[in-house]
Length: 65
Image (cartoon, rainbow, N blue to C red; front, side, top):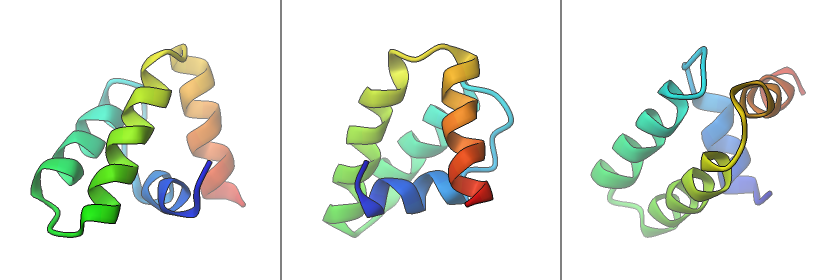
C-alpha cells in the first residue's frame, strides 16, 4: 500500500466498510490533487473485495500505527 493510500485511510472516519468507500469516493470526486484522486480510486478498488472485518482491520491498524 502506498503512502498516499495510507494517509487517506488514516483520515477515514467511517466505522464500518460501507462508509469507507463513500468517503474515498467523495475525496476522489472533489479533490483537485490528481495524485490524491488516483490514490483514492486505487484504494476503493482494493477495499471493495475485502470483507467488512478485513477492511476495518486495515483501517484500524493504519490509524493505530
